[in-house]
Length: 432
Ligand SMILES: Nc1ncnc2c1ncn2[C@@H]1O[C@H](COP(=O)(O)OP(=O)(O)O)[C@@H](O)[C@H]1O
Ligand SMILES: [Mg+2]
Image (cartoon, rainbow, N blue to C red; front, side, top):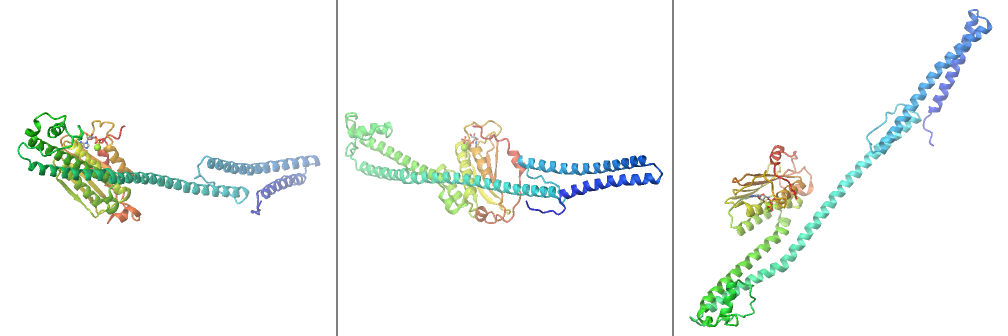
């Protein structure tokens, strides 16, 4: 073992023992000498000397006891520290009182605790980073899967519905042209009887039977009813065409929901503007929209706000029966991004229980919380509904989002509006 201290513990013990010996024998000799000086006889002088030596020995024992006790306490403290380290309390340290072997032990233990504390801190930071990476990977996988489904839908059902709507339109135009050339009571149109019953409405089914004059048709109805039938057929074809067109537009919207390409390519502002326009056309709404298209949030924050807008608008369409709808996306001076979807519809009582299968509001809240934002919902029966999603400014230098938000990122502030959030508390959380 490396010899570090010149004045080690063994030398102190030797010094104390030697001093104790010297003290007691010195006092004994002094006692004898003094007794002789005062005229005591030989035996008496020896007795006095022995008593003085004994007193010196006693003083020396107290001294040694104190030294041994100090050593014992320092060793106990060192043992205690080792125990605390074993139990995971790495913040404790020992006072280093003396530069001896125990002082060395205390220093080493202190350094070990400090090193472990640092290592454990690093490990927990790594674990946290690992957890975040795993979460992001999971989110990435989910996004990838959604993108794949969107691609498949786009390449299959979407194309077929498009072709279906075109062909139905073409057939309707041909039937219209042929019907236009029908002589009154004539029967130039022959619709194949393989048209499956049930694929069109019963009215069309009987009409087809009628014009074909086939086994299902009423005898004699072909000539008299052809004009009427052609009109019915045209009506059915128009309905089919409309249904195919609606299905095509629904599937396109579904694809957009699964994979908002504008969001990936251009960021939140343009994607939201496009989405609001699509929904407004579909629902026949007049939407007052104030969307700042320079807000180019992407990544998880852009996605979260986009999905919140989608769900809020879905709720307006499903529940609100609104006349006026407002959508706004703005960014404050401090970089805070605010998304508002408001309607003047029937509203709802936020304190009344929401059925357990309703996860839309809770989902919006969770999405916002996951990206460091928050959601406020204001509603009352008959007074419309306001859904406000707030994303606080990012601290400067937070790569992804700061770069996506003009003006954001320079002024990091604590999240304001704790009171507003408290006011929002009564909205029941997801219960199922
Ligand atoms: N804009 C709105 N207007 C009226 N009622 C709403 C609106 N948004 C939400 N609600 C009410 O809140 C309930 C919960 O909404 P949500 O969690 O999105 O579930 P879901 O839409 O599946 O019903 C709805 O069932 C509805 O009663
Ligand atoms: Mg909903």
